[in-house]
Length: 362
Image 1 (cartoon, helix red, strand yellow):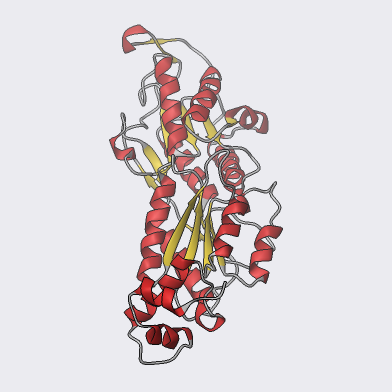
Image 2: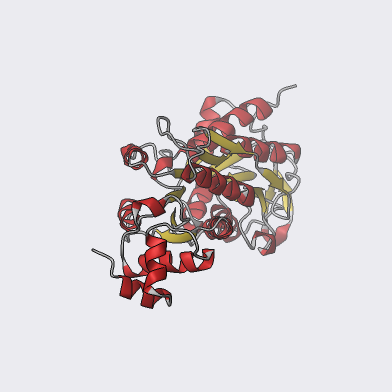
C-alpha cells in the first residue's frame, strides 16, 4: 500500500513537509518528531522505507508461553522494559492452549516489519519440533534470540539457566539435610531443560547417595507442567517412600505440597519440597517455598543486549550463554525424619525398623 503523506501527517500531527523529510531520511528533524512519523506509519499499516528500517528502533516481537506460570510474566516485564530503554517498542505475543501458535505469531510479527524477535521457552526448546523455522528467519535476515532451551545448528544467541546444575544443587541441599530417597518431578522429556534436569538428578543422586540406575528409574517422574502435574507425580513418588522431592517448576512444587497434605503429611516435617524458578510470591506460600532461583533479570537483559547488537550489525557470538542458578532456602525443606519413623494421626511418629533406601558412600 502506497503511503499518503496527508494521512501520515494527520496521524503524527506534523506537516506533510516534515513527513517527506523523515521518509527521505533527511536531516533537520527532531528525534521525537521522527519517531512520531515512524509510529504513524506503523499504526496506519504502511511499510517503512527500506532506508529507515535498520536505523529506526522500531518493533521487536516477544513470544512467550502462557502467562499462568508467573515466571513468564517476570521475563516479559524485564525484556519489555529493557527493549524500551533501548528505543524499541515490544510486541508481546502470548500463547495459550488451542490459541494462536508460535508460527502464526511469527507471521503476524513479520507483517509488522519487526526488527527482531525474542523467543522465551519456545519450540527451540522442543527436540521434537522442526527447527528449520528459525533458520528461515535468520536467512531473511531477521535477528532472533532464544531464552531457555538450545537447538544446535541455529546461528543465534541462546540464553539459558543451567538446569543441570540447578538440579544438582537442589539434591545436594536435601542430602545435606539427611534425605536419601529423593524424587524428581519435571515435564515431558522432549524438552531440553527437562533432559538437563534429569541428567543433573541422576548424576547427583549417584554421586551423593549411591543410587543405582534401577533406583533412579523409579524416582524420576515426568508429568505435565503445572500444579496438577506436580500433584499427580508427587502421589506416585510418595507411594515409593520418598522423603524429598525436587520439582521442575514452582507450580509443580505447589502441586507436590497439595498431594502430601491430602495424605495427612506435613511439609516439611514429613516431606521436603524444592521448586524451580523462584517466581513471584513463592516467599509467601504456606510454607514459603525453597526453590532454585533463575536469574531472570540478568538473563533478560543479556538476551535484549544480544538482540540489539544483532540489529545494529554487531552480532553476538552464536552460542549458548549459561547463567548460574541460586538456591533460595525457605520453609518447605527440613532435616529428614528419623529412619524408620512413619507419620501417624496427630502428627506423632512411630518407629518401625527398615533398611535404608540407599547405601551412602563412605
